[in-house]
Length: 220
Ligand code: ADP
Ligand code: ADP
Figure (cartoon, rainbow, N blue to C red):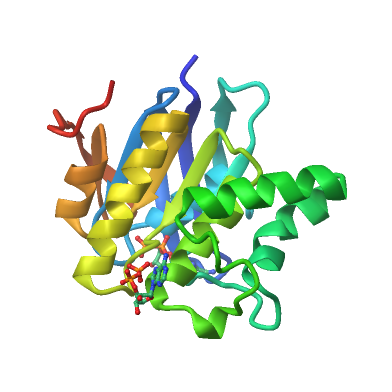
């Protein structure tokens, strides 16, 4: 069984918009898949359906990962402005009821992995856009996900920051071997990052191409 399988998924929003129509997609374990396509073709909707946010109108999603642990990274870092970096990163563990002591270790590790050691007590307003996204990635990492869903996470950043973060995401991916579904409308970013690029079209949202990428990046 693939890690995630979408079987004939259709999604119609309450205003009648057909966001997805009979979409099929099988994602393998540890695959890094990008979804690309014009605005409105249903990329975010696919992620939401995978995450179980909102009803599917028809079709089903099957999972080949038994103990799945999902993490979602949005376009905006969406940090709590009144909380420090470490408090922001700790939030999912707090919600999960992780013991305080273990949480502290995990938070420390996650902050270190994204290169923000020393900024634990900083507030979001004191950080650059790229640093805020790093905090957001640390908050996703802290739960040790095996499925990482990212929705245009670096869309709002300048090219240099974006390419730095892309490199970091690849490094993290090669260490953790998550199954990643990455939404972008930047085809270059998709090709650089992924094993596989799914191209979607709009009206209604559907898959029009499924491309295997032979990346030069080492993926041992
Ligand atoms: P993308 O991520 O590719 O830009 P979306 O998944 O956001 O596409 O949207 C797919 C289609 O569904 C678009 O036509 C969009 O306007 C519509 N849509 C998305 N969310 C909603 C919603 N909550 N209510 C109604 N229509 C929506
Ligand atoms: P990012 O790419 O994550 O936005 P940059 O390297 O572009 O980070 O830095 C943006 C600003 O934040 C710069 O002023 C830089 O000095 C500061 N900065 C970023 N990371 C660190 C760090 N680890 N230590 C000290 N300053 C940092």
